[in-house]
Structure formats: structure tokens, C-alpha cells
Length: 297
Image 1 (cartoon, helix red, strand yellow):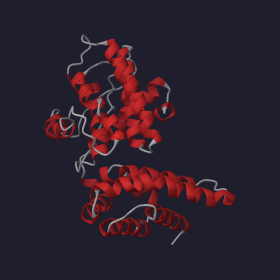
Image 2 (cartoon, one colour; image 1 turned 30 degrees about the vertical axis):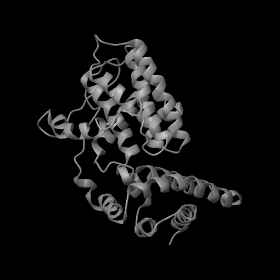
Image 3 (cartoon, rainbow, N blue to C red; image 1 turned 135 degrees about the vertical axis):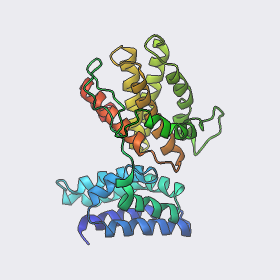
Image 4 (cartoon, helix red, strand yellow; image 1 turned 135 degrees about the horizontal axis):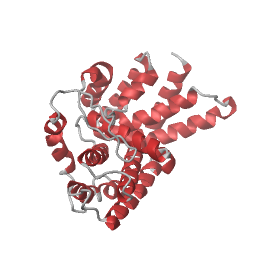
């Protein structure tokens, strides 16, 4: 076994020792370690794991550690970095263990190993038509231009309409804070048009999304942080008339909301299309504004 795999496995084991684990969760940790031992390409596996809801946040953290180990490592500080990495893995590992069991974890890993090529991909932001310098297109590989909307409408309702207005805590105050503005913002987006823009409301939601993105970053949820920052940037650009409030833009922003809700609630729903759409949308905004979404955290 190579040193990087040993480092990752020992970090996971060290993190798990700080958690109260049932026999079922211990089995999941063992399966995770085994998957790392058996993989022939850690970088590719982590990339694919990011697209699987149950594994996404942990995969991002493991990939960050992997990238560190592939850089110029200061051997004198390696022991301290190991303690740091083990510590930051605790929250992400705990989050994954709360939303999977041995069966669903195996299914998620099987998806990473065998089935991702079968997942329908959505091509986004590749049109030659430009609006205010930004490409926004939801064209599909399918010949039916409405296939994305028809195919995914039920999943949108399942995810977004499941957000309630009551004050019931889902996991803790953090999750409640993240979910609170989702339904009101989704309602605003459904009625948002070029002729119907409430500047104050858009500015308010942009500020909330930016704040929640920063909170997500501090709590170690990088996907949540990125999705919030993309939304915040998009709302500000719409408010400044630099981004059109058309169907394609609204769908891209709603895709970010869907990813947020799915990650927070641990819903077993395939959101690969939404994640691809949201990330490409964020990349396009970054190129247009000259700002890296990550730099906004």
C-alpha cells in the first residue's frame, strides 16, 4: 500500500475514534477504508464521489488532503498536519455516517465504480448566444428540448417543496439557518422576470446567501458554500441588469438550491444533473466577473 493511502486510511481511523459508532457505522468505516485500499486511481474516485450526494462532502475533504499530500510536503510538520486532517475529517465523516448504512454506502460506491457512465449528463452553458457577456443555455443531448424539465419536475418538487416554513430543527441550528431562506427564494424565482424585479428583495437574498455561504465554509461544507456563493453572485448580477432573469438563469439558480437542500437533508435523490448545471453556471459567472467563487468565502 502506498504512503498516501496509508495516510488517508489512518486519518479516517483516527477521526472515527473520536465518534460514538454503532456496529453498523463501524462497518461503513471499514467499507470506506477498503474502497480506498482497492482503488487504482484515488484522484478519479474522489472526483466521482463528489457527484454522489451521500459521499460528496467527505469526498471534497479527502480530495483536499490528497492534493496536499501530492504537493510539497514539509516532513517536519507532517505530524501536526496529520492531527489537523484527522480533526477536520470528524465532522464530514460524521455527516456521512448519519445518512448512510452499509447497504446504501455499498450502493453509493458501486455508483462511483460502475454506474456513473450511465448517468444522463446535462450540457449547460455551451450556446453561441450571449447575453451581456454570459452564456446561459440548458440544451440537452436528447432531441426533445423539454426533456430536462419533463424528466426532473417531480424531483424538483420532491426536494424543494419538502422545505417547510415551521421552525422544526432538522439537525441543529446550522441546518435550520441554511434551509430557512430556501423556500421563500424559490418562490421569488418562480415569479421573477425582466419586468418584475424587486431590487431590495434581490439584494436582501443575495446578502443572506453570502452569509450562509460563509457559515457553510466555516462548518466545513464546501459544496454548500459554493452553491450559496453562486446564488449570491447571480442575484447581484440580475439586480444590476448584467444577467437576464430568463428561464435558463432561473433554472440554474434553482439547481443550486436543489443541491443545497439535498446535501443538508441527505436525500437519496440523484442530483448529478443539477450539480453539473450549478457548477458550470458558477464557472461561467466567475469568468464573466473575474472573481473566483471560492475567493468570495
